[in-house]
Length: 296
Ligand code: NAD
Image (cartoon, rainbow, N blue to C red):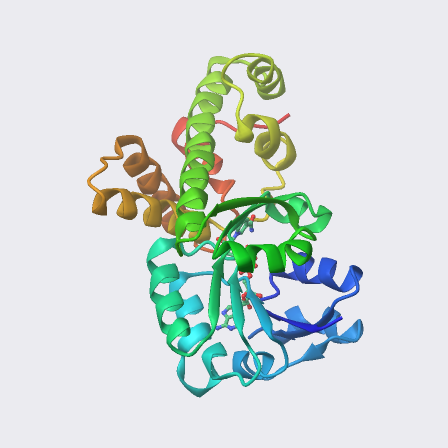
């Protein structure tokens, strides 16, 4: 099979790139962290010295990177950017970077004859490993048809339209909701435990009732009640997603009252526990305010 390029093999990109290897694709990878590329070298993948080098080996280059600025830099930044690769004809952004950077990078790549796909994903590290992600895709339909077999390696595909940034908008909407669920669930759990309820009993009650959500069904049972706080999504990245969502909404004249509050709770969590902390630390903020531990 043709060589596929992959830039950014971290918590999400690592397992996704690994699934491509499992499916028989040849890979050329790059990451600023040598630790991240080590397992790929061990499995026979090429390890490049820059994004441009990846884009000189592969026609299709996927990226899974932390922030819009880093995606812009990796795509367009000087000689080392993907845009300067000699072979590349398509860049696929699997990161959550918002519609703004999608439109901007797509425009500049198009000037050099390189196509753009924005394809943010949802489902966390577990979904990335299992190939059960929700994969949102916006690009020309013809491009979608071409990449569909490869992208199915990651999970279930949802075609969001031709316009660059449509899939990113869908992803921001989802992530604001997921973060809102974390914040609101942390608040009610802290209250319940302070009142004397057993945390596990309260989670079981909510999960059988109308308040159930992705935090009660997944994040609390998996990473908060057992006190591991290791869901696999950084506070800084969640803050970035919610901030991007609220900013996009503001720019469109759509007020987001709850969205603004969720953004501030993530800012508080980041200030208290750091950008690298797992975003389940939102619950720790509420624990500190309430003077309780949500365990069980
Ligand atoms: P991560 O920090 O674990 O991985 C990012 C990788 O990019 C790291 O290996 C890092 O070394 C590398 N990197 C950083 N700057 C680079 C550069 N200039 N050139 C090359 N590599 C560089 O982050 P993650 O959790 O894997 O998230 C990646 C993207 O996916 C983010 O946009 C995030 O919002 C999104 N996302 C994450 C999750 C999740 O649950 N972790 C779920 C869905 C979407």
